[in-house]
Image 1 (tube, rainbow, N blue to C red):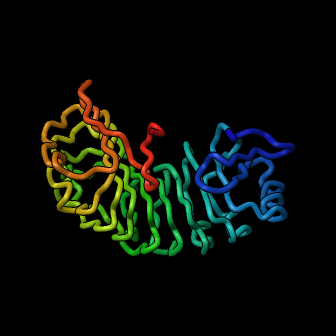
Image 2 (cartoon, rainbow, N blue to C red):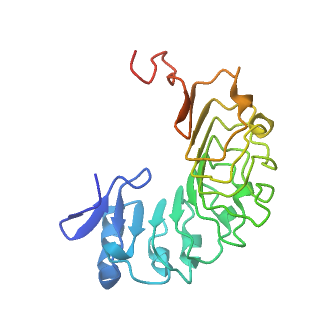
Image 3 (cartoon, rainbow, N blue to C red):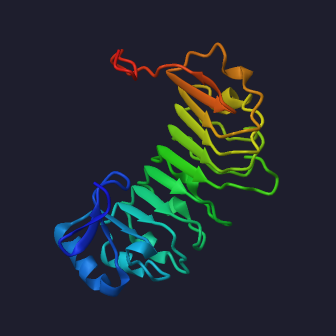
Length: 246
């Protein structure tokens, strides 16, 4: 369901993996009581939906929360996050202080807009899926990125490195997606860091020229679309039925 008002509260099941209630600043106490009484496991906020504050202190009142999604916000304090021992899904836009992600031992999925001095991703043995947005280091490489070895799915969106050189080894990684990375010229080191990759999707990377390395690999699914040229196959499911249902 999209975000909609159900009775008195804004709610959705479309953000992350659990039902969420919107925190509206002008009625924050009522929203918190509703989350407590119904034991809702997700909360979200956006100025368009009434979230108009610069901190997440209220999370201390609902420490059982497992999912947070806050976007188009400008936060000055995020310390309330550290009260969430069971946090499994994280998503907060980049206008915020740095976060020590090592505190979230149960994190399974994150949508990460990197902030200077963010740290701790490498310590997360439970993290399975990570979407990275706007990773733009000065050296235009992935040498400084910190990723856990447990990752199975990784997305890069609007990132500036010209190649995949410098990536940490991710032997568990099965799926890689790369979108709108307009500096990207080569992916020929892909199997050096992800030797067990099964699925690859690359779109809107206009400068990508060097991807001969993909040929000959036994892909479950591959889709590369560069300047109108497409390399693709039909994805296979574990039951032998492909994506088209044939």
